[in-house]
Image 1 (cartoon, rainbow, N blue to C red):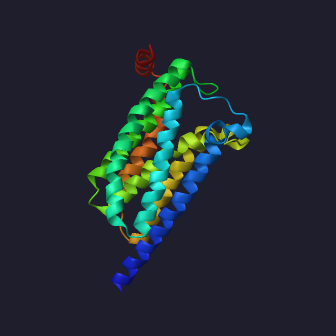
Image 2: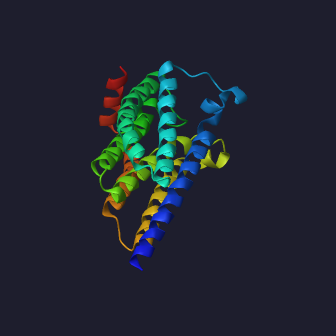
Length: 239
């Protein structure tokens, strides 16, 4: 009976990650379609620098790698999955380095959103990259613990949803602001932890801790963005 239930859980998790591997790229294309992936169809503005293009390239590579890894796990090609995992570490390092560089370059250009200064806005991408580094480092630490590893990888995906959600070309997205682009991944994280606990009849504490850390980082960024300490730091970085 226990063996059958465990098999059912594994089947559920495979279907879940497959759905995520489909929905996450769709959200990214909707968010960045007009300004990056399909900008030729929408007469979108040209990219401000090669750095931004490189940033888009490595982030796209991360999405494709995630889809590939999900497929490999579903097809039980564990060895190839593990080999690609080593490549993922190098790509993750690139994401962190280039992510910080792109955020600083955007601050220098004065890139922002209405109502928020460029120095204040810099904390948003800085927070995304920092949280990614923490969550992915945790996933690598737990690479031999499949339950913790895949749940932390899931959180890295949720962590990168806000940039795409914030660029959705819909009026409601602009009107809701942080309630939309931060609220959606936060609610999803809590739902995923709850469903995971219900399905497995046990709370995964690493999953909960990672989810709470990601959720807490969102309001903390907004609160800290206008502080004198952050403004001085952001100004120093862009000077």
